[in-house]
Length: 79
Image 1 (cartoon, rainbow, N blue to C red):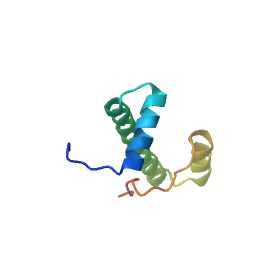
Image 2 (image 1 turned 60 degrees about the horizontal axis):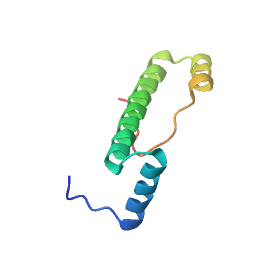
Image 3 (image 1 turned 90 degrees about the vertical axis):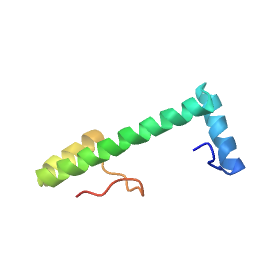
Image 4 (image 1 turned 30 degrees about the vertical axis):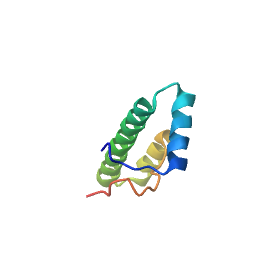
């Protein structure tokens, strides 16, 4: 993966974000990857919840408490 080429503008943005967070770029990217992995796991869990509950009042209460699904190209589809 060391051969990954990132456009300079994106690299600069990532470096600025890392600096703002007080982290090195590799540490910042590791944090971002971990957060994305957690988001994906939560999306999978929420989709499973919606599949099994089928009760719109319960789903609405869940969304009110925890937030509804955010459409994303990276969110796995429910099986």
